[in-house]
Length: 103
Image 1: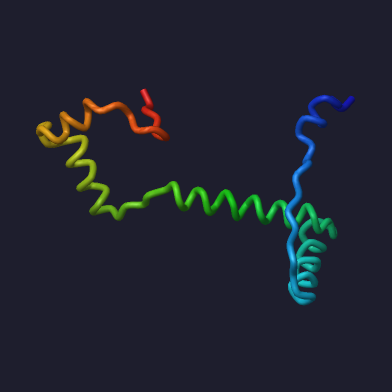
Image 2: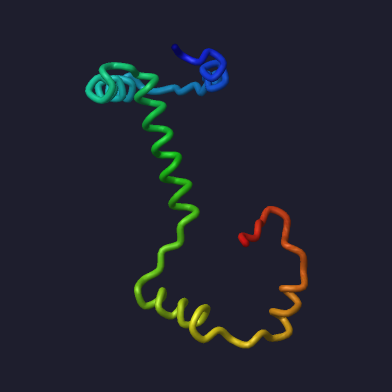
């Protein structure tokens, strides 16, 4: 038996409106037909969520070439520089708002 409270909690209540050309809507409707059996809302929602996740992941991910990765590891893990006055001052400051320290 479905959990009514849980389904009410996850119920979609927000709206997003889109304006399209006839050609764009026909293309999206055709894609929805082959991907979801014609459920346009589900198709647009799934495509939007996937694109949103990809955009955020791309923004939050830094990729290094092999040479840069090796240089980074060498500098940070293998042979880190001795702390200088600027680093000591930075370490003494509180963590800026919006940043979290992983322990």
